[in-house]
Length: 398
Image (cartoon, rainbow, N blue to C red; front, side, top):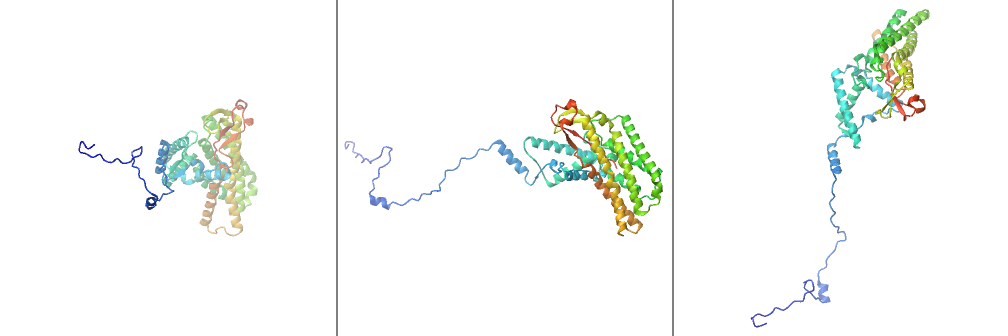
């Protein structure tokens, strides 16, 4: 080892892995610094891998920030009378009568887009989120469409045949019927002709489109209804003229209300039956629960729809004619009826307008617009179908 003039270095003791072996006595071990170990030490969590659905959900949440989930179907509970009354009351609003045709068409198009959006959202299990301004716009469009667009044909209804025209047209008519003092049989017959002509137009404008009517059908129904109302009014007024002539003030108004109610109720029912006799004879279409599948026409469903609508016809003139007459009678009794002529006329106008505004929704809310017909009560050729429903479009009459 000394031949090369280099002294071999002293080897250091190593373990099998190449680490130096250090031997320390007990005293040296005690002098080593102490290490503090944390019991809360946690290994870093594995990062989560987000799915496409999670990313889309987060994106929608960002887009819908500040918006509200909205469903038009939940705005009205049509399963009870209160919900149906509110539903019809909003659509009969006389202010909707003054909406232009261009605005109606715009509302119809926007309403259709919203319906398509709502259906697409339901298919993916989502909701439609809108800002408060957008919700207000959707509701307004829905009311305009409901009052001026036929639900079956999706066409704009002629202005005087719309639901919103009911109050506008009938206010002057009812004022004359109730408060005009010198009513003759000829006068009453003329007023009933005007009334039933309007009713015939409303019947046509709000008919069930599944039962097509010919011009002959409409003319026969109109003539029959007018003949019924005019003849009843004329002969009834002639027969009671001696008794009516001795009445004055609020008692005369009450008698006018009773007479006109009887004529209007009977004529309205006959108007309905004659104008919609095709539905009674041929029936109306029945479908599945959501209306996506039509099974055919049912005569029993048609008769049920006509009878229920006729019942609402008989009740409709009740608040229209008796609320103003009763109000006039009671206010005169307790001395609160205005003494001045113009103030009295304004009171009459207020009573008539109020009664007309609530009368229509009160009567047509009695029955659901879409009703279920039990399998046992349906026509024989439809007996094997699942529980079906029939759609009924209510007609309007004073």
